[in-house]
Length: 114
Image (cartoon, rainbow, N blue to C red; front, side, top):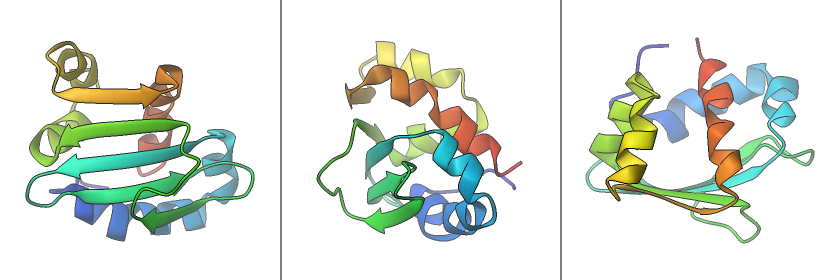
């Protein structure tokens, strides 16, 4: 998969088909995430990778164990360079609430696409 150009493309187009093809691998992550991506191409999504998932829903639903808040441009850059996540976090451009260790597991989800 080429790096998405926006969070909308990732959550509305790319990830649904990826988790549909790899539901067991997606469930191995074992968490529910909320994403709040600001700016053009952003939006809000809940990504359920728990035993009851996997599924992606628009909007931030109750029950998320980890919430990620970031600008769309930074989010897309982070998809292309996962090491950028820590830098953005330290700069205050990436906010993680809930269990921060779950944020580290997201790379496993995005690697399913490759």
